[in-house]
Image (cartoon, rainbow, N blue to C red; front, side):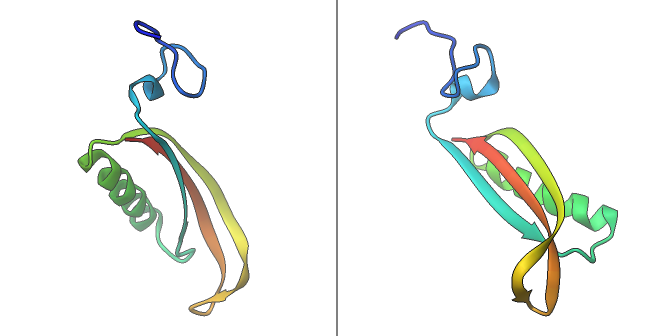
Length: 86
């Protein structure tokens, strides 16, 4: 109700209390990137959310995992789960 401080995920006082809608995006990053290039990719995706008035809740880096089938000759990819709200 009015005046509540509880977010859509049930934790009072967390960032998501300001959210209208909660989203998750799982993306796969080229496993051959340098650490610097990998961080730039993460920054790019985070920046896209923030530029569009989104609030990043969590960036969960799952690490390198095998793909179900080769994609552009890659057998593995670095999986990143981005949780945010808009």
